[in-house]
Length: 228
Image 1 (spheres, rainbow, N blue to C red):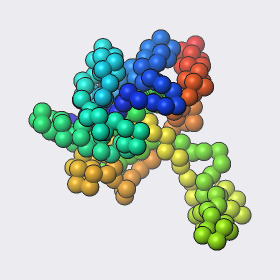
Image 2 (cartoon, helix red, strand yellow):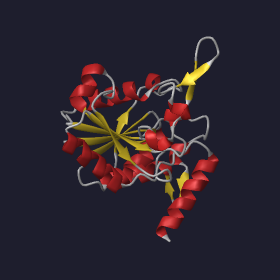
Image 3 (tube, one colour):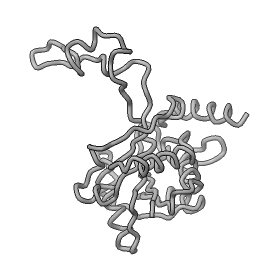
């Protein structure tokens, strides 16, 4: 059994109420719920939230709701304690997913195809995790890091900033859209696996992450172009 968990708290400082703001005729979170529900290898979809409006919208679009404790809905709360609580809640209902698929509602351009392919890839590789990424125009392998004395050196190695990009390993930026991972491994450590992790590569447009009004406008434009 593969279960999709969508994390959606009510508070948001950058773009207030962003999870239920309209995007091309639907609440933002609806895009993620519908993508998960129409992915053929996702068996069920749950939204973990502390917010009644988000819960109501989630049910309207066909997701189940996991009530999230207030202490797990703070600005400083990371995703992993929220996932752990959600999996424990599912276990109390006799639901034990083999794979957990974490989907963040701020990635509306991630489709059911992307979700399906990520799960298939995880199974094909027998991976601990598959994470969606994009390949940035400017490779982070060429970046510098500051040392304690204020000088800088290559982040990857001392020669990397002076090397041709083609001569360096490919580097990826996580886009936050999809995390597929083995549930047992996660519960053993309370962490998304850090080893035996494979990338599922998406385009930069598909990797759109909604954090500001400008992000929302850009995503709406991309969606309209797709349908046209």
